[in-house]
Amino acid sequence: MKVVIQRVLNASVVVDQNIVGKINNGFLVLLGIANDDTEEKVTKMVKKIVNLRIFNDENDKMNLNIKQVNGEILVVSQFTLYADCSGGNRPSFALAGNPELANKLYEFFVSECKKEGIKTEHGIFGAHMKVDLINNGPVTILLES
Image 1 (cartoon, helix red, strand yellow):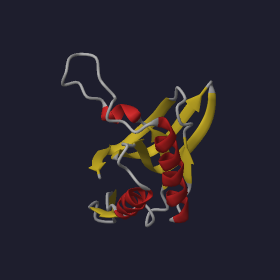
Image 2 (spheres, one colour):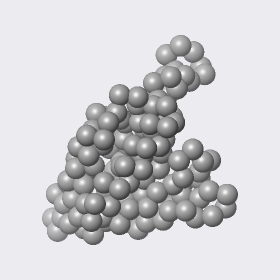
Image 3 (tube, helix red, strand yellow):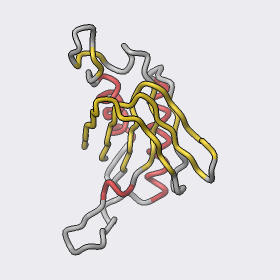
């Protein structure tokens, strides 16, 4: 699993000219699933994400997690995180999880975020999405399992 977390002031995702997910202060999470990913790995990753202390405290130090700032999460599926460009100029996506597994784990990821008590919105798996965001910092973190 590969995850790109962007700390945002707000973010939204549009499909067919309709906003399908929108958040304010929190994380835009780009989620890539591989064939060896499991629900257990997803649960661990969600725990890691919700406990990341990358929001500023009263001393302007990154010391608070998303729960402490009442943040929100927008999850967007992103198989292109598994792009392999080592063989030329056209990326291979052979390392990305098959769509059936990836969709199942994507939905599970969203449900695990919600179980943590965090307002969580999401895009539509497999759809052509337009993502709009205002990065806060900017702060961008890459996590892999």
